[in-house]
Length: 486
Image (cartoon, rainbow, N blue to C red):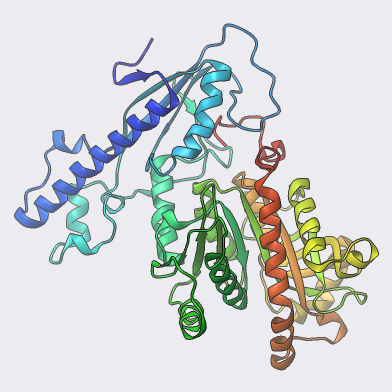
C-alpha cells in the first residue's frame, strides 16, 4: 500500500525534480525563519518547524518474476521490500541519482515515491556561510529554536554494516543519508578551502606540496590548449578560466603553495568529470579524515600519488612502487576494518597505473620492471619508525614489504570500507635502511626530477580509467548485505 505521506512518480527524472523542489522549499523556509529571528527575535512555531525537513526517496521492489541477471556491481536489489534514504542537494547529485535509479526502475520495475522525511535539516547546512547569521545571537540561542547537527543522527552504521533495520521498516537505499552527506560537505569546505561542489570524481591524493605546483602548471597548460577542461578552482574559491603564464602563473602557484587550509584541494573541471588533487599532508589521521568526507560525493577513484621510503637494496631513488597489498600499522581504522581483513588490489586500477607508467616513461618489459616494482607497502602511524627498527624488522621482513609510508594503507582501507575504488603508486624518495636518507639538498634534487613525471602517470591513469567505469566499480567492494545505490 502506498504511504499517504509520499507520492508516486513515474520516472527517475521526475523523482529527482521532486526531491530538488522539496529540498529547495524546505531550505528556503528555514533560511526565512532564521532571517526573521535575527531581525525580530520571533522563533518558528512547532508547525512551522515541521517544514524544515529533508526529502525522502523510497523504492518498493515486489518482483513478479525472477530478478534479472547482471554483472553490474550496483543498482540492484538483494531482496524484495521497501528501501529508503533521505536526500540533499538533489540537483548536484542528479547524474549519480540517474545512474542508480534508471536500472532499478527499468530492470526491476521498482515503484518510486518521494515525500518529506522526519529528518530535520540542521540550520548550518541551509546557509552558505555563517556571515549571514549576523552578530548578537549565540549558537546556544539558535540551537533552542532551530535544528542543529546531532551526532546521534550522523554516522556510518550503514557503510560499516552495523545498521539495525526494523523488520517492518524500510531498508537502507544508500550508504549515506542526507544529514551525513551535508555534514561532510561542510567539512570539505573547512579543510580544503573551496566549495564542495568543485570536487571532481577522479581524485588524486598526495602527501607533498610540490605535486601541487606541478598540477597547477599542468592545469594551466590544459586551459591554454584545446582540451576538455573548462576551469580550475583553487583554495579560497579562486576560479581560473584562462591559462596564466609568467608572473601570473607564479602568483597562482604562490596561492596554492601558501594555502592557509589544512588539506588544500585543486579542482580541474571538465564535462563528464574532471580531476581533483588534494594535498592531504602527512599521516593516517589526515588520510582517513579527508576520505571520510570525499566519499559522500561518490567519486570514481582515490589514487594515492605520493612519496615513500624504499626498503630493498635493488631499488633506486626515483623508482616507483605499485602497491598490491598493505601492512597496515596505521591503527586508525582497526576498529572499523580490522587489520586481519584483507584489502584487495583492484585489477582495473592496477592495470591502469602500470600502463600509465609505461606510456609516460616510455619503458616496457624489463625496462619498466627496473623502474616500477609491485609489492607490499607498510603504512605506519609513526614517522620515526626507524628508531624502533630492532622491534619492526621481523614484522616487516615477514610481510615482504618493499616500501613504507604513512597514508596509502589508510586510503585503501577507507576506500574499501566506503566502496570507493582505490590504488597507490608511490615514488621512492629515500632508502632509510641503506644509508640513503632524505637530506635537504638531495630531497630538492629528487623532487625537481621526479615529481613531474610521477604526477603525469597519475593523470594518464585517470584517462585510462575514464573509459571503464562499469569495471572500475567492482563487485570486490560490495558486501552480501548491500544497499542498492553504489
